[in-house]
Image (tube, rainbow, N blue to C red; front, top):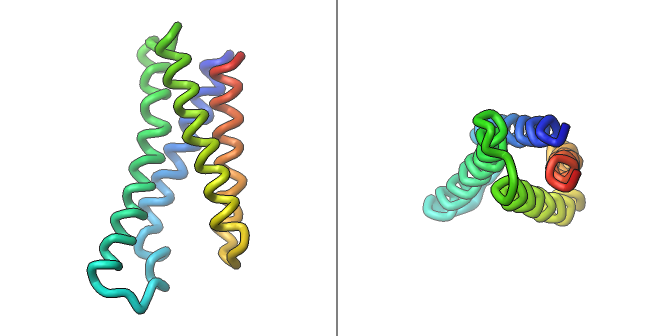
Length: 124
């Protein structure tokens, strides 16, 4: 049963990563008044977060699908994924919640769900 929780958490992280990458142009359209170098740095960070979310979901999912999510490997990967999802949860609530960005507020609730599934999959 714990592998099902890991797969659900991984799937949500991968989906969020794909949405993050697909929305790059629209999300950064309103970023104005920056030098071209600073704008490139913002784009790089935005794209980097998208790839990080894909990686967050892909590693545990691959281990489950290939039957390697057992023993110490499962604990290390599961706890690492849980820790990253927890840090992203706190970061999202601190940065997005005070803003008027409705998408950011929705994402602030997706990260705790991902963390919950990783916790259930790792600690049960």
